Length: 346
Image (cartoon, rainbow, N blue to C red; front, side):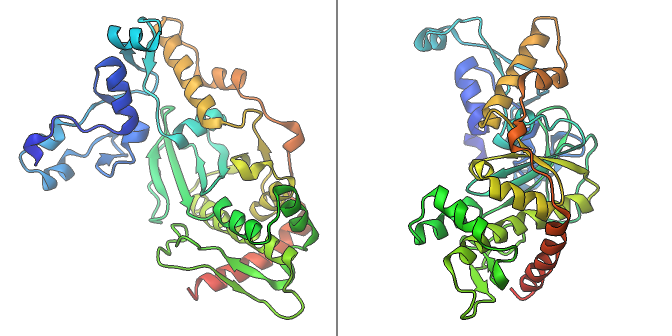
């Protein structure tokens, strides 16, 4: 089989190949393949030799590029087909989380990007490699010259949507229901593992609701419990990052769930960290555009620092800024301890 392989390319690398005719990749996406040495930022050829002793598989891997290096210009036929300037420069691009980090300005220590999407992600910038002892923390390279330790949960807005649709609520009514229930949902605790779970590492787990009795079985409590339960999963992951030495002074919140003011307050209180949203909701797309501008400036001979580009292009929404409330933080710490106790029983 290996004799038939000419090139091994990730999807966006294949798109770059189609555009330019050049086979290459950048460190961020490459670090997610499983055959990349994140410490040395190079292909793990000794590992690949165990798969294919002939070495052909290793030779099929694309050239590694720095994130600010161009792939090349458009092929003439492709430029004509797309109606684009044949001198247009194609930047390396990268994975969604790597671009999301750039698009939220998460390119130096201290910031956390947290995405409230169908799944949940929490990631930070590292200026040195930190391979966590926890298998749930994925150590990626960033697309900004550093590293990107990351955790990803399986259940977030897919879980909250399931409960919202169960009660036939629109998003406005769902948020109102969450706000009407107290912290801890009067003892109702949900482990929202509808799809198993990656963080915590419980692939065979199923969802469960505990603490129900005749006095707290209400729509508003169940709505709040699913939001709190999914957010506790993110807290679990953030604690793993903190345990490995990652600083988390501020959280930049993205994804559909970040539009909810009540959920932003829950995140701030559970994490005991201020949160704020970016003005541009599509952070990964913005990050890709910023990375392309970074690449273009270097190619033009007038390199601009990525930090300067981020400061110029990324806006923060002051109306979304949310700070933890000390009383809420203390209350949530008790609920989170109940969540952890339930995890130990799964």
